[in-house]
Amino acid sequence: MAALHGRELCLCQIVELVGLATSTVSRHMSILEQARLVDARKDGRWTYFRLAGEQGRPEAGAAAELVSRSLARDSQVRADSVRLKQILGTNPEELCRRQSECKC
Image (cartoon, rainbow, N blue to C red; front, top):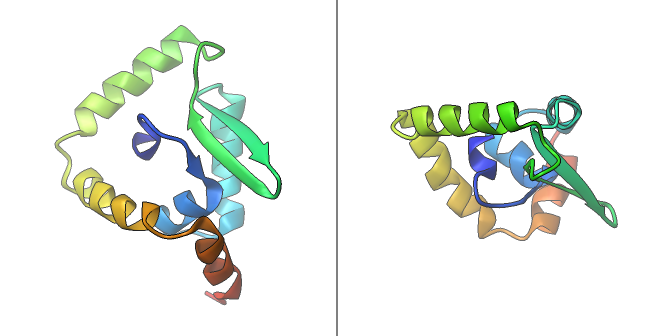
């Protein structure tokens, strides 16, 4: 969720960041969407996620903000932020192609 702060990410970008299987990340994002912590939108074959807007529960937004502030100094979150910058510089289609070729 910290990676979504102030931006929208494609599922393949999130998969690349966390290094888990697409199905696992998709399921986790679905749970976050059901909890109204994130919003999802489809654009062709792509699914994009962002932190929940006005449709989200106010308590969830406050909790997400607290967690985001708390993790701002976390070394893993900072490393993820650096990694995310690299990921954002890669075409999502290329990420998706690489992920579908991986037999991890």
